[in-house]
Length: 211
Length: 327
Image 1 (cartoon, rainbow over the protein chains, first blue to last red):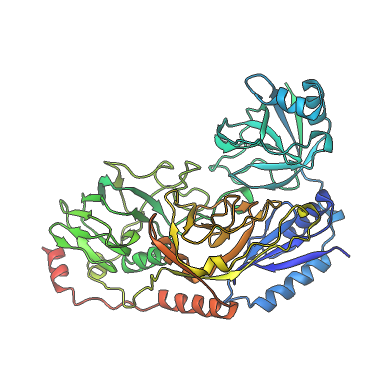
Image 2 (image 1 turned 135 degrees about the horizontal axis):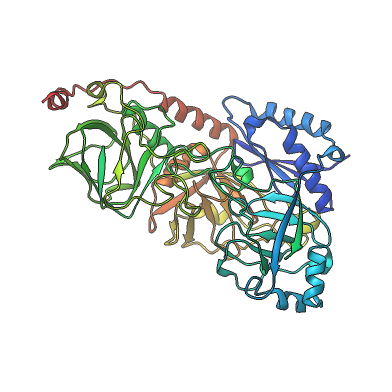
């Protein structure tokens, strides 16, 4: 039985969390749950949770809870769609990835070894957040896990590929940021004129390729 | 149709935002004070989803370049039409050459100027709202500037009938935000480094001051009260306007319209949806208090607010304005 916790968040929202230990498994459960919840509640999947928002005048709290519990009983994360595979070409190191050498040093790797591990296999988009179109991709193996930089940068260039907190991400636009910048891509991750606006969606698998 | 003479501190095009795009990392956005935005639209004969100008603090000025009906709601920024006061919570017919001036803040922080027919701007992800950090929505994704022209999105049905209307019921802007408790108990396996839960009595003990770096993303709260001890970082989860985050510096942030849809700071309380418009009318330096409430009270307050927004509008006597329109 998958452990879930339903936390009321104000009078018009619920945060439904999967408390399984393993991040990848908890995320698969959260993505599967987001697929089966009513669209009118705008289910928002994140690392290990789904936020829903509802109108308490239309949907009574107890009824929302009951529907969520029925949805939880019915989900099958094993049946989670494989997700699209998206290839992201990256220029690693140098001006494109100013933190590559330092990050490799901290991890006890040669820069080439870090690149080899980063490109070793496709990894899952766990969620989109922080900024429009910003993918949290992972989880990364322990050998690539670093805490965030002590001092965040005020402006990280658009397209920067970065690692921190056991995940890898891509800055869709120039943003402040505290992750370690290891490379850069020219792929456009977010375009508000596009529908959907984000290139990547939770559940997609990203394969980084060194160019 | 209006021309911007001066945008003041910040003037942007806003409607009711982009619900439904949060899973792509897009904030809900939209009017900081959706109550005033909806009322301004209703006075101007628009659907609630029409776009308005959100005018922040004083200093904004507009010249009428084609006759139209406007309505003003929300904060009292000392609006004048020519040499006469332009009362908040009313609609008015304005003639070519007249000037609308929001002179200085008297109460509140944000006024909403509706234009009969709705303010025109391209729809981006289903909304005309300006999202400044993302540089999209509104007019070119930016704040209004001098010489921008504000056009109606569609011609109004009956400009004369729409002029001189008065909103019948006052909106409560008491700087008191009712909150519901929220915390993620620290029993998740990856949260073992969390300290004890913070002592939240400080949250309601004394007023907080709205900090200088507050903006459309959130109100930073600075206290005469001691900082609340931080808890820790969490795996990012969905948040929304009204959630009160506790970042590492111990100064809470009340998330507002442009808040990112996910966050990793602990959330310690959630403002009830019926009080968010009160927070929207605060500027840096203002005081605000918080008070715990219950879910039932929150839903009752939401019902009352929805009923208020449905109030029928009777036309003002308004003879003078109607006559002016015909002249």
